Length: 243
Image 1 (cartoon, rainbow, N blue to C red):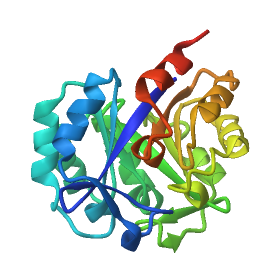
Image 2 (cartoon, rainbow, N blue to C red; image 1 turned 120 degrees about the horizontal axis):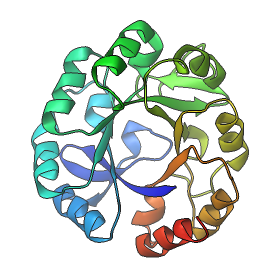
Image 3 (cartoon, one colour; image 1 turned 60 degrees about the vertical axis):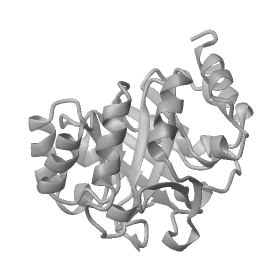
Image 4 (tube, rainbow, N blue to C red; image 1 turned 180 degrees about the horizontal axis):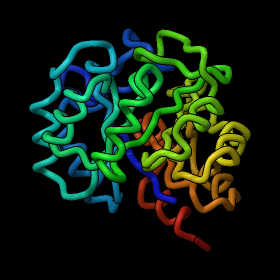
């Protein structure tokens, strides 16, 4: 299991939101390229990048910055946020994304996403953006009729790489990961699962280590890093110990 630091891009700046609300953004670094280089220098093995403008329907705002980040670092980049068409899939691949996280589009156009997963082998994750066991879509502002179990039933036999589970209720709240939700979802899939939403401190990471399923691929750190609760070098050491 790895720790993936997050850069949430809004108007080409590194920001954080609370519970995914567009109006709650706080700028943590006006230079996301330097932030990405720092994460690589800390030894992180992958960058989690969210295009918030795209998630809220503002396309291509951050494309130049994403290109600059890709040119500045060599570690893999996973990108999510507003990928709701094949055109945008191609756009982010062309910008240098190694992995894509698809949410709303995976709900409304599952046949298309299953096809895209065949074309882009081992590059597609499906987002499980969960609030009260329902999948939220369109920048987390609209509730779908789907549960995570419904999504697993659609995609488990497909060629997607895995899923990214976000606990919206705790996202950006520094209240701690919901380990019950993580364990429940891990038990329903054999594909890779990345988790996020509410990571508080090292104690959360120690608890995650007690989950023995080897398809728990990683945990995302956002606000917990930016406010100083998580030291990335310490966090990586915790996740490596007795691995």
